Amino acid sequence: MHPIRSSALLAVALWGVACTSPVEEPGSTLPGQCQVDAPLISAQKTDLLFVIDNSGSMAEEQQAIATELPAFLDELQRGNDVEQDFRVGVITTSVYLNAFYDNREQFTEFPDQAGRLQPIPDELGRPTAERYLDEGDPELLAKFRRLVKVGTSGSGQETPFEAVRLAVTPPLSTTPVGEGGTRGFLRDGARLLVVVVSDEEDCSTTERPPRVLLTEDTSVDLCSEQADRLTPVQEYVRLFRNLDDGRGSAREVLWATIGPVALGDKRAEAVQDRTPQGTFVRNVDCPTSYGPGFRQREMAERFDSGLKNLDSICRASFRETLVSIATLARTSQSIEVVNLPDARLAQVLVTREDGTVQKCSVAGRDLTYEPAAEGRAARLYFQSSCERRPTDKKLEVKLLCAN
Image (cartoon, rainbow, N blue to C red):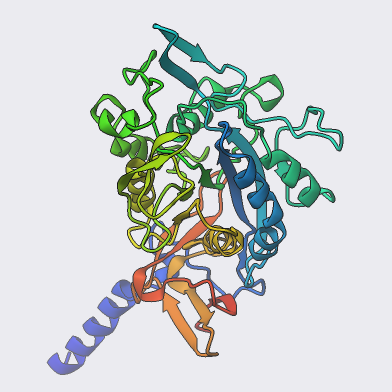
């Protein structure tokens, strides 16, 4: 046989063996033909946990929150092509009170609060069996307004971080809502948004009794001065960031605070305010606060270095603040996608505020991909080069097809 012809035949034979379709590769999820059904973006599930300070100084602030809830809900329900599926529960900042009064140390616990979802009052203010609200409730606004007004008979030693810890960990997280726990409120695969509303510094610790002992001297903020006796903020952050989402992955947790920080620049700084009623420690630019807000600010900053999730409790109106928090809640940096056979086929089109369309893909490293598994759909995570923005007009997932 001619050597040139022989070589050509060998090359053709080798090509036939080596050139296999990617569809036929072991473990491939690429379909053999184009699909008729386009990928669908699942509803974005967000569980909102409001942590309301119910100490004696919070009546006006609770009413101010209730007043602006219509704007909060309107913004929350704006989906920008991603359906919103949310629910709301409320806990208080009351877990314990360790104080030296009447010449003796007194340690008090609040077992009916301490991370427990508070009952939704009826029209006459009487507690009902309901412990949280779903977005489809026809009385959502009216019930929500009643729910956030939790009263002012709670602890003067505010512990929002500890209250949240108790709410999202055993035994409460494994006890059904109907039995006083939180199991059933936090849904599998849902994001958790915590919203703290307080005019005082956080005084949280996992120890019982706490080592910080309050006194009647209001000229010092013992929770700030003895912060080394409290559980570090970073320890709470670590715990919250490692919560299981019920599907074997880390739950996405967001944090927002309306707290004792400066009106102008959100800084935490203590100042003594001498009044006819006594001397009180406040934030330097927050005249109705009762503490400098060091820990409150640190917690918010751990979740958002730009502090878009933080505002001052001293604002005359919380409308813009609540709208901003709702925007944070509805603008997730990940989406669940049904009917996505392979991440390499996905292209996400994001229509920006000015009408321009940005094309994002896993191949272009604008997205990362978590494949579907038993009980959960595939998930796409937006990277900084293709970050979702609150002002986006449209979001589409396209499936690329060779034929």
